[in-house]
Amino acid sequence: MPRLGRAVEFLGVLGLGVIVTTLLASLNTYGHHGALVVALAEAAAVVANVGMYIVAFRVLTPKGVPSRALLPGAVVGAVAWTLLQVLGTYLMHHFEHSGSVYGVFAIVLGLAGWIYLGAEVTVYAAEINVVLAGKLWPRAIVQPHPQDTASPSGAPAGSGGGGSLTRPPAASAVNQRRACSAARAGSR
Image (cartoon, rainbow, N blue to C red; front, side, top):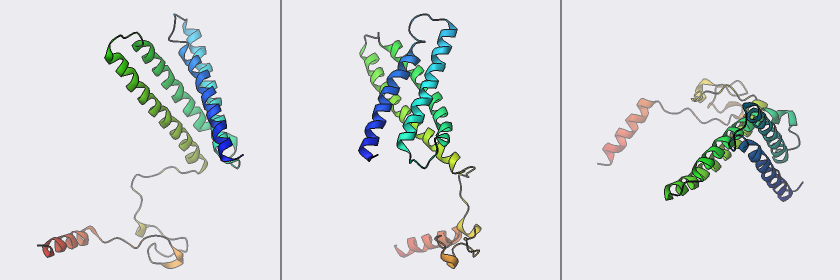
């Protein structure tokens, strides 16, 4: 399907999904429902959100990615999105009868933050699928120095052997400080 067709299809899925799941998520805040009705409404909202995320991820990912690989991110995204919808519905219901300027201002800022958080939830859900499919865990915050790893040909990294694309080893911290001191002394 052409890129424009996929974009229109995604917007349709997103629009319909948001309407349906927002209605389901808002059932627990209006009126006095029993705990069973609230729990069923939230469960239905999570199931609808999982469906929305799976369809949206299916539309946006290449056909070579199996649909089963999209499920973990869709479940995490659906639960987070449902919680975000419940929180947003509660806050809107709380501030909608506020007649002060601050109440209107809070609604505008709250909606901007809600949209941002919704986008973050979706991106993180997609990243979960990529990490799980590519087995990209565990990762350290600090990556090993290029000298500590070997290139695919077995030569030390940075030696140029085997067509390695790594950088040459960096100067030590002591040599860097000496070079900075010399540069400062020369500029005086």
